[in-house]
Image (cartoon, rainbow, N blue to C red; front, top):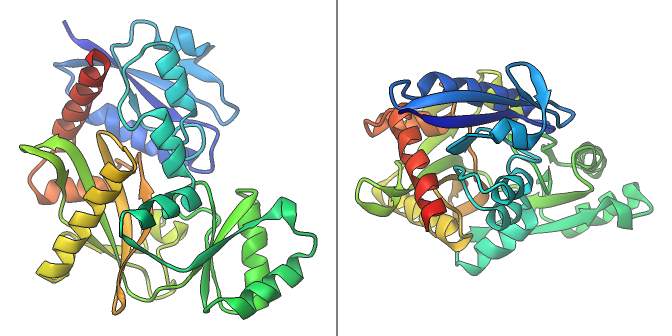
Length: 325
């Protein structure tokens, strides 16, 4: 008898479209001989749907053996849907609620990662609710920090709301942009270098935390960093595996394992880094990285001879095992 796997996709976040694509890719890749896939669509307004009909989460998940979480951003990655699944006693893929909430907050993640001995860029958090004069705040920040700087919402992913600023007027605009996504913004020193991403998987190929080979991200000439358009507009290129030295590869893979274990993440994650002349710096971690044909984790899997269907089978087994424990 086939197991019923509920694929959760969509959701009320700025990464809604990416989540729909990840979910569609997962639905195609699931082994139809082993699993009966149930497409569980969550609208931008937070309504759950099965077969086009709005239902409660309880109804949508009734009879589901394992929930495969294909959502990104708010609700899907910040611990909210994980708490619903735990309350309904439905096994699910990915990290638990507490670890997901921690990893979703860039500043909390930075603090935790720094304690692990992994380098992070100099930065400061600005709370929009605690400032009265944005122009003055931007001017003071510009005077006190090395520049250019990167400005990011403290929550969210896919570089939504992220911008580079090299003047205080540009910094003000970037802060306004970030505040449209999150009430707090992280302002970080811009580290020039090559961007790398490393996926890790629990209990894979005989290793407790298996690190995939680092992927090198090459942004288009029109962009100085790997922004949203570069990620999803088809303008960036990747080297799989990346063109890094053996020492750099070992450093990146070790750091990705440290982040995954140190933040108590589960099943799989993907950490992003900058490889610079000053060393290797952590950027952020994704607890539910994209799984489309264009996404980085599937490309890294392919580079080591693993199929997406095999990976999905593996994380479904991990989810089932966690429930048993």
